[in-house]
Length: 183
Image 1: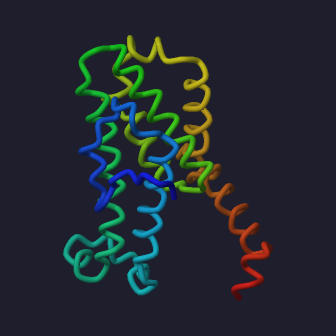
Image 2: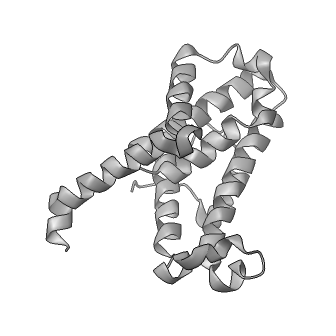
């Protein structure tokens, strides 16, 4: 995507220090999206039959790529929680939360809903939300972005807001020039 790539191979985002200002959040979002794309493209349709990934005894054998994608989602959410919870200084914790909110927002712009939802799962986890004195100092711009993202990923009405957005994206893809060129 750009001349310098963020090293995110095999979802090793956990090793990335979110306080490191030398890495651009936009570039990170782009690389994160490429990695999510790779994970999703590796899932053959046969792994989606009968929700076999929900069976602990069968998932690794019959749905290894779905299992890998789920594991990546959970690892990302845990990385976000850990990054926030283990930062001792409040000013740095505020900066980390704001960067994660910005990352989740950029992922939405890149149509990486899975990535954004994994970041939001960490940001809005019980552990992260307990830091009330930190959240009081988050800039209003980021609070609004967080609220917008929480609205998108709200579990109310069986994730109806999220499903509506995905359905709109699918309608667009079906009618776009891209879909017409590649039937």
